[in-house]
Image 1: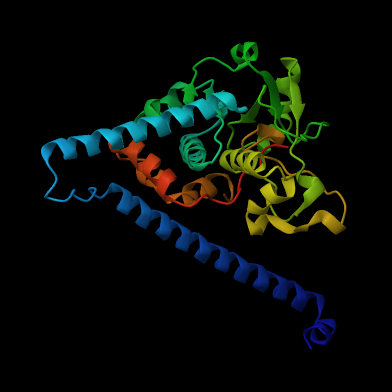
Image 2 (image 1 turned 135 degrees about the horizontal axis):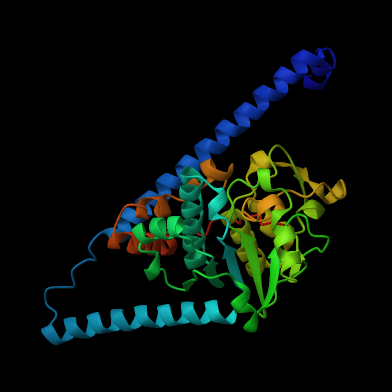
Length: 333
């Protein structure tokens, strides 16, 4: 059969066959992504529609009571969300890499941050989310999205060192010799907000060492054999952390890695070279290749990009209406 035919193929033919199979796999993945985006867009449109009118036979008092109940329920849900963000571990996205990125990379980072917020809103157990070292370029991009209204997100123009009075800081970087085994509610895990870290190999580890803070890498090499680019986006790292927090299993959390990046699960093959994370410089944390992945990741967040005050509502609506995405974040580990 196919194995016998493969034995008679030349190296060039085998190489072409592999390229063809990889191309087909990418096409299938793109089609699945399009379907997911269409589904999320439909959910977003449904969420933006006016709620059904109450029955006409309701009295004014009954209508008012229903409206008050809805408002009270929304406030209770909001309070529970914010309480969970404060109670659980924190994720800090170190945005103080602005000087080394161009406008396109900055737009990509802003989009990845939108995806992080949307994922946190969808999560059954969200975490605290802090953006630190926010410079003028990123601040302008986030202002367009009304990010100051993102619930549970704290933005700081200063760096993250001031947070160590509340949490133990752990910088996630693929260059670390320490493997992250569990998430602690007393810790804040830092993801480097860097889109192109290829030119800054080891930058996040160097920064952490200079500041004498702990480092760790995600246990990706223990569970997954990476194929192609080892760069992961900020939101992929973030979503991996959320997925592990929900499941308690790194193997389960890493199932959300894009298939084009995964050669095979490493259960039977032993450890592999650690991947770099797109959000954590050099080997730090950061769905796809840096800029392209962010642009294609989440229809709801993309819709929010130009919506003025409606942008926040669009992201929130999509987060609550769309099904929880599989863990797609691979951080720096």
